[in-house]
Structure formats: C-alpha cells, structure tokens
Length: 198
Ligand SMILES: CC(C)(COP(=O)(O)OP(=O)(O)OC[C@H]1O[C@@H](n2cnc3c(N)ncnc32)[C@H](O)[C@@H]1OP(=O)(O)O)[C@@H](O)C(=O)NCCC(=O)NCCS
Image (cartoon, rainbow, N blue to C red; front, side, top):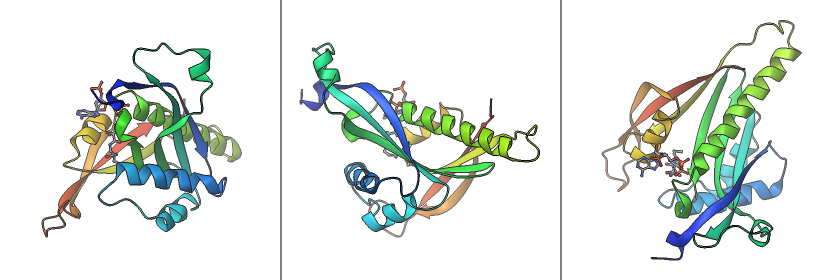
C-alpha cells in the first residue's frame, strides 16, 4: 500500500474567488491543473486570462491530509491545509457554465468534487437572488441553467454529473482531440442542470 492509499482528506472547505481577487489564485490552479490534466493542462496565461474574465468565479477546495489510522486531533486539524480540487464557473444572468471541476488525483472518491459542486450551486443561487433583488421585477426569480461539456470517454465525470442531477442535452461531435493526437477526435456530451433560486 502506498502512502497515498493510506491518506484521507479531512475538514474539507471550499472558498470562492472573483476575478483579480488574488494573484495567488492562478498559481494555485496552475499547480492543480498540471497534476490533474497531465496530457494537456491549460497554460498559465490561459488560466490567468480565464480567471480574470468578467463573471468568472473560481472555487478552490482545501483539506487536511490525515492517515487512515490516526483519528483527527486538534493538532492535525490545525495543520496547514492542502489544495485538493477546484472549479471554474462563468455565470451570465440565467445561464452559467462550468468549465472545470477537478479533484487532486490522490484523493478521488472522497466527496471532494461533490463539496465543490455544492459550493458552485450555492453561489449560483446567491447571485441569482442578488440580481433578482436588484432588478425592477424583484418578484420574478427565474431558474438558472448550468451547462457543461464532458468528453464522452470520461466515464468518471459522466457518472459524477449524471448522479448529480445533470441531464444530457446535446452532443458536440468530434469536439476533443484524441488522447494520442491521432485524427480520430472524441465527442463532447453537453449536460444541463436547472437550479432554482430557492
Ligand atoms: C470526475 C471527478 C471530478 C470526480 O471527483 P471526486 O472528488 O472523485 O468525486 P466525489 O468523490 O465527490 O464523487 C464521486 C462520484 O463520482 C462518480 N465517480 C467518480 N469516479 C468514478 C469512477 N472511477 N468510476 C465510476 N464513477 C466514478 C461516482 O458517482 C462517485 O460516487 P461513488 O464514489 O459514491 O460511487 C474526478 O474524477 C476528476 O477530477 N477527474 C479528472 C478531471 C475531470 O475529468 N473533470 C471533469 C471534466 S472538467
């Protein structure tokens, strides 16, 4: 058993960052991106540009690494937290798009992406309520449609989204380059989840 197999994540929290809220955010995403998307990670400049685009919110999950045998003590809980996952969301009125949700390769299936998705949904609801209160028709609070696309061959992500109320609503044929960069491209599945403000 490797050290990683023996490690679990405790005390997961998710923070959100608006464009230009911190120079450090892009650096943290770059590190996670390189670790998770080893084949074709987004470049630093691309990440920085995306995070600093209007209506974009970045979510970073952090947690404390503990070994399976050791129960969390005050000491472990006070330990410095590690970045374990992230999401990038673009929210424009009644439509939003998730560009990424990803979990550190060493800590999958521990509920980290689920925590991040909850934070994303809560954020979408909050933004929607705020814009509804600010509008002249504050009694009209429309639902928000959250879209995302995922490579058809990415069965983990497909399973993850389908079990979390995302419904398939389209397909973009030959959208992604093949993993081996051959001419055979892969389809993107488009999913949608409707989020009600309350
Ligand atoms: C998809 C992904 C975000 C899930 O992250 P996670 O932190 O492991 O997810 P959670 O622990 O919150 O949820 C796990 C659920 O996702 C699904 N899932 C995750 N990995 C799976 C796998 N290998 N096989 C089948 N289902 C899987 C299951 O529904 C699972 O629930 P279960 O453990 O109760 O069976 C993660 O696998 C990942 O980062 N993949 C690489 C990045 C990526 O492809 N992101 C999506 C496109 S941007």
